[in-house]
Length: 563
View 1: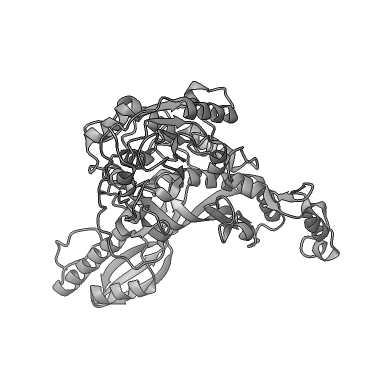
View 2 (view 1 turned 90 degrees about the horizontal axis):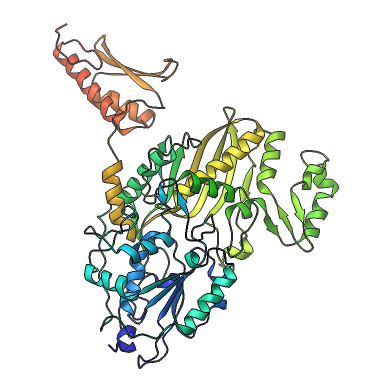
């Protein structure tokens, strides 16, 4: 077979532009062709998984390298298939690098439930087993779905004709540098092969359901545990999210809510018996992530970790900080003189690192009601114009004590809600517990605001399957904002709003019809639960019927008796 380069260059990608790669091209770190004739075209693709691209790309031999990129999630398999079928000269994939965000993998990572559902293990499973009749990879049924517009026979051609070379599994004890060196040897030495199909291919994309109308802006979801609230968060984004692009000149379409607010009332609950996530979490993976988010250490090959940003915040001048904390004005400002002023500053030769998390703890110990307990990850000189390699998604957090409990507010500027949010939530809960334990109070509510809350288009089918399986209707009239006791007396409908715990009357509404009383309740304040609002409307209508017909009204009882 001899596929002409011009055929590949003339392909139309999913963003409408010409050329290859045809999918997620703005996320590809490196790609090339050798010439316009098609002879001696590159055969090798390299994926370095979660490792920072700048730690890999400069070190790779480019002689026979067609494409090199990260591979973060199992669902990235569909984009990989599209790019290989768009350039059938690719005959090898070399795998190396960190296997997920919070742990270095060696290809043997397993949990008590079996193989962990990492992107690396997804590649291994695909090249070993292919796909089943439901267009899913065995073992990854919730995490991967191959778009039905890509014919199954073409998917199998990739499996059978492209070889996965797994350096993480083949070289489990080797250093990252040794694996890169081996990859370069392979790039130079692998047998050159012809394309595995005679024509490059592109395919249409499945469409998502039309979004429902809503008022725009923030959506607020309350729930107890992290798994429970995640299902409702995803339901709201998939139902109301606007179709939007992640960036200009990209094909990465998402459903997006601006400022998705998740209020978690029991964030320290680590029960995973309900595990609805597309990539089910394990205790081991959660603990690894918690360890990272509480650690100041920046692992080699990573642009940042939240732990490093929060616990070793970089400031470019050690002398400026020394001068500041030793000034009389600073020492006398609020807490008085003391070594605590720079106790959490680690001075280096030309810069210093600030442990913001420990600062937050010590401020709350001195002033439990301070409203200034804020930690940030953002460096304006680096991030605002993207002069830095990679900007953190978690931008800031604030700890506050109310009702003698430590509440934590966290803001993410951009959030992958399907795979990123669950781990992030458990990590934020770990930060909350760390602060609460050291201050000596209980952990309270965790509020996570996702500025851009996204569901990527390659997750749509998996999301529909997950919601059908796990989002069950639960009729619950218990309302944290109180209950309503309804009576008919002295020719009027009388409604008492009472505290749900003490049963103390909070306010009273009266009127001659369900409509008039309902409008007064509506004007007074929002009823928190839709179930409760519908119930209240139904009971008010019963009360009006009883009033007009002369029958006896009793709340939650059918009207059967005459007065």
